[in-house]
Every structure is written in structure tokens, then in C-alpha cells.
Image (cartoon, rainbow, N blue to C red; front, side, top):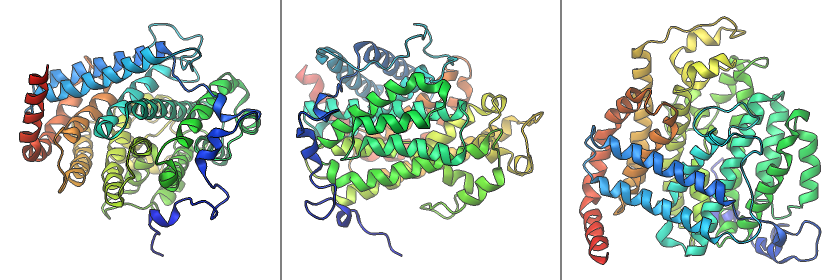
Length: 463
């Protein structure tokens, strides 16, 4: 059956019980009213996000000394400075109450290393720093206030997704329980009928007892995102696309229950994942599920919610096709650097499966399993991931002007953000990956470089 287009799914007054999403934002006097929700992120969290952006940006600048991307380092620096300025502005605008994301007992220096907590706050903030960079594609099409709201919404959503991921990994959940927990949280974030007390009751019943310390934070994040989304200019038009990607994410995350002890069942994981849709028939089953485990497509939709004009169907379609592959790349890069860490935790991650599928599919347990992975194994897997990056870059830029060179910028930043645990330790893996993607970066840069250089000249003269 052909898929219906997005316009036919738009919410219109009178044709769906969720009429006039924005009307909810005006309710007053009700218990848990949306208007009373605190949406500003705390200054300390924003300061840490800024530090991540600057550290990641500085590392990326250093890569220009080793690789020829055929665009000036000043373009990369300009994007990073712009993101820093946005976060500084958000921090300066905080007045009164703010939502604190940092767990109360986390040491001040627990930023880059793994933390022995229910939620790896430092790693989540690092990845959230990456989501703020996506707004560079859309910033000129938003008002300053809507840019601030879009950045806030993306940070909040990514923190919720990071929380859920860590809670599922460290808790005792069945496939159905994991899927229900994800659905309850993610669906509530864009639910026009969201009611905070109803949300809290179900969340309390869904979490493991030892994880209830995250209860208030998850409730606050959900309420804040819901308020921002319901007030966004294009949220109604993009509602069903966001639901579709949420459903994709929650299915993918629930399926990870079959990758770890004691619920490991890789044969079942393969059967279900093989049925997932993909834009190209050559994608293997573990690649099809990979794109379900990243939310970068969703963060493009969040930015689109806050644009000053409606989103065209052509832009929406092209963006989601390109970011299908960027999502795949993000997941695979995350897993390739975490193969042995995950294995120690009893998890057969997707990069391990890709490199040793025949071995691991026959295992009933990972206890005592020690794969003999070689440099060649890693290089072949990096080559496969680089192919997906090439596809994403090609789809995103085909027939499109990119005077800010956003896509070369984000294609470079993705491996830096995802592999930053190894900065200064295993630089060889990032360098090898960039060697593989550099030719495609140079190809797409050539068409837009003259406009980009003109933009730099104008900005320089203005200063």
C-alpha cells in the first residue's frame, strides 16, 4: 500500500480530536497547566554544553592540519563560534527558575569519562552539543526567540533519549516493558492532551524501583518539551512525521534488549530487523536497525517546527532521506568505538555483529566470548560506514545550494562528536575515517565554495 503524503496527515480543526494544538498553551487555572512549566535550561548545564562545543570544535580545527577538505578552516570556526554565541545568549537570558539537568551527586570533573550513575550525564551532554550544531542549517530562517526555543527543545529531547537509553541498558526490562517506557515518554512530549499528573502516575509504575531518582527530571523534561512543541509555528504540520520517527526510535531501542544478557536473542533481532524498511536494498539487517537508534532526523524536524515559514514537501523529503544515512552513521560510529566496553557489559553491539556476524549469531551467551578483532576488521567496517556518509552527503546536496557549507561541516563534526571519548588516545580511528570521507567532502564543497568565500568576505568587511 503506498504511503500517504504528509499533507493528508496534517491536523486540522474539526477532523481530529487533537484540534488546535496551540490552544493548549493558553489553558490557565488547570492543575499541571502547560503555561506554568519551566522551560529554560540551567546556566551551569548551558556552560558545560558550551565547553563541549568549543572542545569538539577545537579538535575538528586541528584535523585540517592533516586532511585536505578543500574549504577554509574559517568556515568551520565560524559555525562553532555561532553555536557558542547561541548558547551564551541562552545562558544570559535565563531569568528566575530553570531546569537543572545535572544529577545532584555527580562530581564536577565527571565530564568526559564514563560515570557510574544511572545516567551518563557527561556523554549525553557531549552528544547534545552535537545536536545544537544542526541548527546552523536553519538559523537564518528563524526569529532569534524561535532559535532559542529550538535549541532548548533539542537539548531537552536528547537528554530524555539519553536517560531512557541508559535506564534500559542498566535496568531490568523485558522487550515490551522497554518499548512501553519509551512510548510513554516520547509520545507524551508531543501529546496535545498531555496532563502532567497522568504522566507521572504511569512513569512511576514503569521505572525500576532503583531508578526512581530520575523520576522528577524525566517529568520536567517532558513537560518543558511539550510546551515548546505545542507553541511552535510548524509543529502541527510536522506532528505525524515526528510520531513516525519516535515510533522508529522506540522500536529500535526496545529491540536492543535482544543484544544483551539475560534477554539476548540475536536470531530474533535479525528476523525483526530484516523486515525494516531502507532506501537502498543493499542495507544489511544490522544496518537497517542502526538508523533506528539515532535521533538526528528528529532534531532536524524540531528545528523545522520553529521556522518562520512552512516546510516544503521537497525539503522535508530530501532532509529525511539524507538523515536516514546520517542516523545510521551516528549509530555505527558510536558502536565501533564501544565494541569492547559493550562486550564487557554483556552487550553484542551492532559493529561487533557487523564484523563477527557468523560467530555471534550462534552464541546463546556472551560469557567467555573474546573476538579476535584485527586492524583490517576495523578498517573494513569504517569503510562501510564511510559509504553511508557519502550517500548522506550526496542526497543532501544534490541540486541544492549550500553557501554556508553546512553539510561538509556537519559531516566532519559527526565523527568528532561520536568518537570524542578517544580524543588524544585513539586519534588513528578518526583520521582513518576522515581519509575515507574526504574525497566526497571535496566534491560537494567545490560547487558551493565561491558563495561561501563571498560570505566570509562580507562578514569580515562588516567587522
